[in-house]
Length: 373
Length: 141
Image (cartoon, rainbow over all chains, first blue to last red; front, side, top):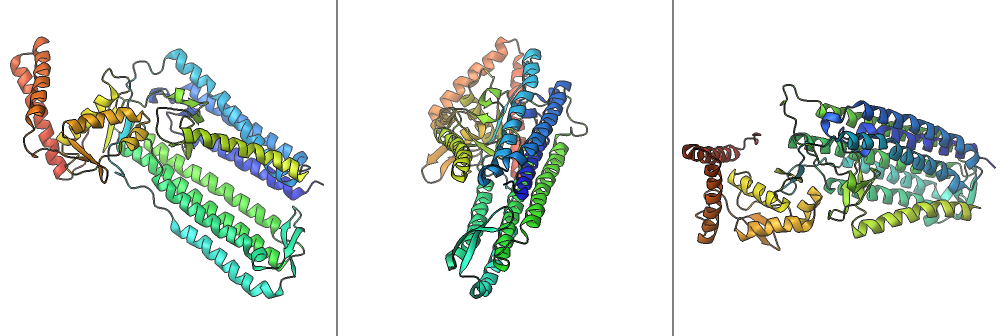
């Protein structure tokens, strides 16, 4: 049976993934278009602009394909129906990324863009010389407070709940799994929500200590300003995502208590929260890209001689996406595409993590199909 | 305190790192007692081999410019006004100065120009020490 809310969730997730990939070039350093290292005086070249435009057009096509696939995929077992279209869009967009950047790589090699360009590696000699963006703790506190409020409501409602409480609802909002009423079965989802809040709060603190890589080609002040701009976006996105996810869980849990026969808020809640997630992604991207573009604009009366550039390190970035550098002792490195961190697959632990991630992705699809079917 | 090294230079990376640290100490940007990034952290920040940074720090330690303890990591041990260098360090420095000055003369520089050049460089370091002590932001040269 095709449940239309499943189709909706899958389609909207595809659009979310597509929006993130569309936003990618706006988040990247202008000397790293589509993850290709280019010297600043070639960053605005026609071949670069056309490659980015072509990438964006193809991402739109891939996203639309994912949306189209969502309907037939909804016939699959529930878990697979939700993730498969998303994975398709992700895989398609990654392929588009790798393909679109080739023209830039080719032009760079053919025209020898780096010939005669002085290059520098930049790093801070002293630890923690610049303050990082603070964790917006209020958002996490709000998330915990909402969950605590839901728990308080649960304590009040507990005596009136049925002896067998629903523990899972299908896409139509009808309960399809039950458990005997107990503190565990009633409050477990709230505990998960609280655990999620704590885990993401810890992640936000890890981001404060996450490694930075300063790119040559700008002053140290500008390089740090860029780090702070992306830090700020990461912190805001993490905090907003935490609060939204926890709100969604809490609303659905309370909905399940108030109307155990059939969820009344499932569809509106999913639509509202997906739109809110999309808004967070789009606003975050716009904010950081505006800030970064301001930094990259040449200062009035800037020196005629351009600054030395970051070296061409494409060799260490397979497809512009996967970092493999055995010399580099870093396990985590800032992503080439601007925001976030990725593992160094050249690091023994990094290689292990990469394999683990691959196994998880494959397992989620296979198990979704096998167990659900 | 941000430093830059040239990956394509004929001067080895460890030598460049060492030289940048020495210059920062001379300019008062790094002061005695100030902590340096750990070998691993600096290698990670550059994205280069740990051994390269370790070699740079080894050289600095040998010259007495930094000291490393398991408790506080590597800290700056010397600085302008921290007393005369030890005889072996002074002897080594004199040898290298002789070669550098010889290069100027061998390339046809007038003796007074060589001296003027040395004077200007030392003056510049002293100016930067004053600026650093007054807490002024580092001006680019």
